[in-house]
Length: 110
Image (tube, rainbow, N blue to C red; front, side):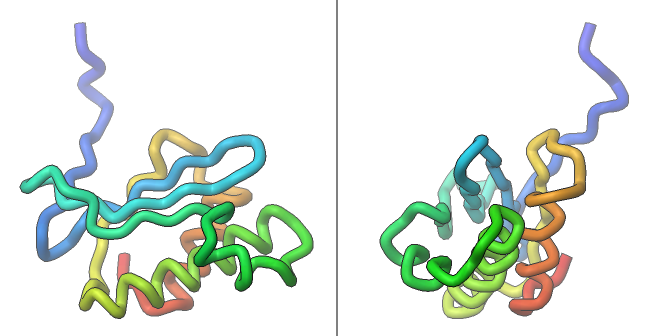
């Protein structure tokens, strides 16, 4: 029997879904248009584009906040400003919250 309390987060072309994945060492983020099933933008803190920006961050939370800002800037270049945030089952604290706060500082609206 499926869990009736679980809500499904769905992204559209107007408001794509920002899904985050947190491993023990890295953070990954993707903007997904679920109506077409395409990834619009993807980034991780161990990618080549983000390494130069993250070299000054001391902690994992600092890296997550900086990655969120950088991710928001890249999304703005693709004319995406409104999103739906999918925390992927993670509790909204720590690195997930830091990434979300950085994305909001960068200009994403959710």
